[in-house]
Image 1 (cartoon, rainbow, N blue to C red):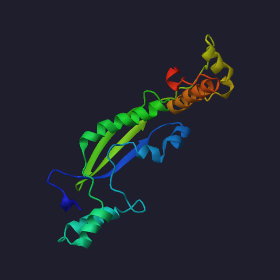
Image 2: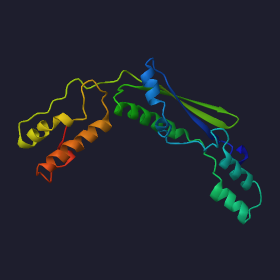
Image 3: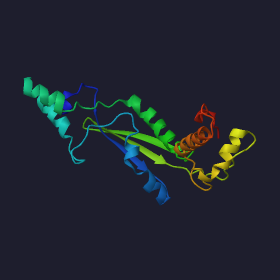
Image 4: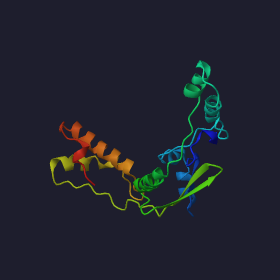
Length: 196
């Protein structure tokens, strides 16, 4: 497969994501498929997580004289090698940090390392989450009519004292408040008017 590469190119073999935390809950929570989708460059897909079968089909078809069948194998069934691009590592690091920040783990540290062996590159993202920030107090002001509507419906709030700060929960809460205000007759009120 490496025969298809130019002199200065390597194949991205794997993005390795390691979460280091003393808190078992953090380790269980963040060892997810979701983390694997964050790096901007993904390695070739593997069959049964072992062998890059589609890449093998591409390479086998590319090395021979092309006919209709080989063209179909190469372009429709096969998968071109993912050439490692070092410029995508730093943006991927920032995206991982942002992901943790959105989940309430501010000041999370993400370190990267790149190892190349036999023209195959592995990028390791070593993540050290900080302690999660939690909601301490949830207050609904009621100075205006619209605020009074939100205050009266605060029993259904998604923001609970002691739960982790989570940007997705905050977005859902903004929508919940906007829906309640709309139901009270303020039809042009949107979640963009709700601030935390």
